[in-house]
Length: 197
Image 1 (tube, rainbow, N blue to C red):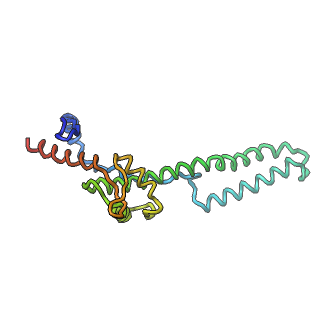
Image 2: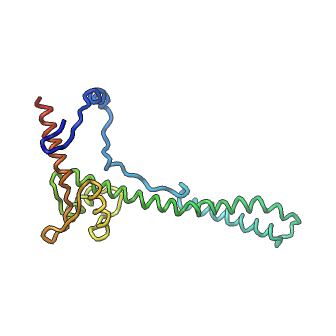
Image 3: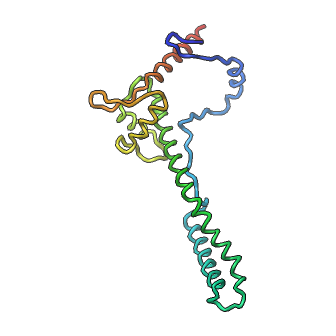
């Protein structure tokens, strides 16, 4: 179906019937799915310090054996521990930039989800950014407080992703989502006509 303003709708009656049988499960909206940060080791800080201290002790000991400063007569006995404990430190250090990058990306995704939630809750075609940020902060669960100054670029990118843009209206930064508002209005009208007809 196509609405009067050109919004395209598809109906899947069979899908709706089969989905109605599985109504025991609660629906989790995309913007309510918090993605936890990636972990470098999966251990608590105290455990990491204990393991790191033990590994550092073994690494220093194996270096001493291999370099011959400890006269055991068999420097080759220190080669295997040297390799193991060098890798023990090298692998997390190599992995750390990737984990940092993934966490930064995931953090942006979690903030975008908060913005999406507030935009989709609001049926208007525009919303002042300060009101959007305040609403997102009021409904936050894990991420930090958003600020217009600190997250403006992310707000603009998110507006663009949903087919909107950010503009100044009477000295107020406003997110305009005309396409989204038009589609929401058409969906409500179409849903009403389906229920009526």
